[in-house]
Length: 300
Image (cartoon, rainbow, N blue to C red; front, side, top):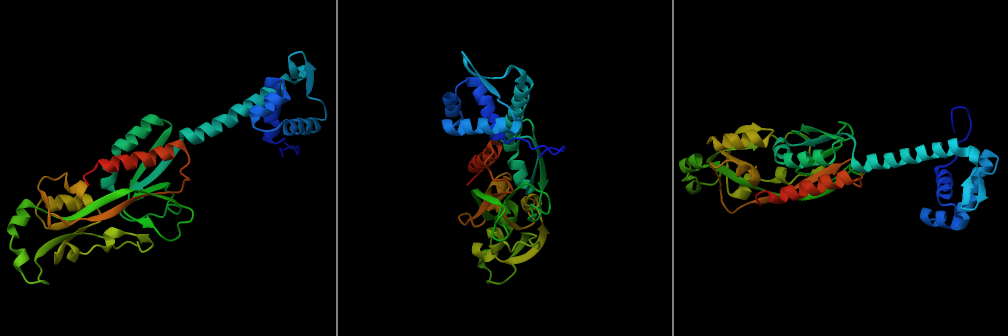
């Protein structure tokens, strides 16, 4: 219904009008539209009833719109182009995409965002580094990449596992050399200085493997010496000999001073893509696929 009260014809009637005008044959136009001949004829009749007049005349080359309907044809063609542009914009990507991701993952996934920017130049990625699990709807975030899978209140979200992120206990060569006799001490003694992630934010509605890990799983004990809400400073402090930290293997590999302790014990945490989108558009599928491929290149 337009503002002056007149009803606008449905888009399928306008498509039928353009198809018959272009092909001049009900049979050919119907076939190309993916409908039967009778449906196309019914739509043309409905459109003629809407305008209160015949729209087509029979010519030697087939059915053609009346000569005085050129403005109507031009309008229908503009509508078709607008509809095509609407679909292309949705598929090719346009606008601003807000992504929440931990800082260390944002850095490692930089090649992915660069590749997507090159492929979809009308997309603008706004990256926000998170120290907690943001609520995508309340915090106006479109996509999150996190070490946890939402379990509750996620009916409106799409989730996809990107892969595993092995986590181990690490210490610097200097620190480990100075604590070489720690294994000989009695259990329960404060053998080690521990560098811990601050996980005081609410995460009970997620399957968060990292939060469930215990130092005892690695055969270690001690007291928390320093805390941070980011892996990056933990890894740096660990490399400076300040204690042991539970770090992703890919991050520890960036610091030559770090050694896994023990060397053969790792826990696979899981990296998930959480999205408010349906993941049907081409750029959304590319984002998920490229993130997955990039993650597979990291030390496993």
